[in-house]
Image (cartoon, rainbow, N blue to C red; front, top):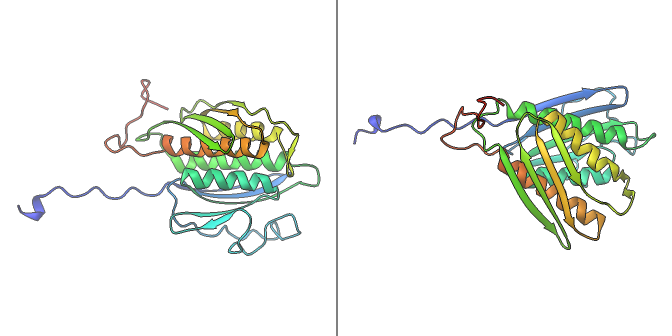
Length: 244
């Protein structure tokens, strides 16, 4: 067979990436996201906004922190000043297959509310931008994830119909310096800006850390499934309406 007559392989799809900078009177946030993993450039310098004062991120983003992990397939580096929030975002990115860089300077002298809410809003905006046209994807994703005695379920529909239902039933008001109420509020904020319908339920578990981490891991796997690019559906909108 003449090699010139054989069908050529389709070009590789470009990585789905986004960079978001979100500044308010309460928080200053940078988010860099790749839904397909891979290397990410360091977040750009932003004047005096991210000077290390003991709560905020170190200037050197190559410094290994409690929520950083650089591998051949993923770059993850997160610092919001709320350690448990960083831990959950790290788990979410890791198991979703994302590369993710986040840093936030928020008004933690008040509490963790604005920092948590605005971080999830910025991450939702980055998700929407990185995803681009909502075509050629699986659209739906679901997963169960255990962590020891805890078990959680997450269901995602990339529907452009923002809606969130969550059932966590935490036993304590705080996990580290994160108010447990902010898990529900944060995920609702993410669903709003990500344009997804999201249901997350902790089905069982005694330890709040385990309950929360199993929920984020289930969410991560569900996101990975929903964002999958389906061969043969390129450009196709998975909706009876023809639009999402």
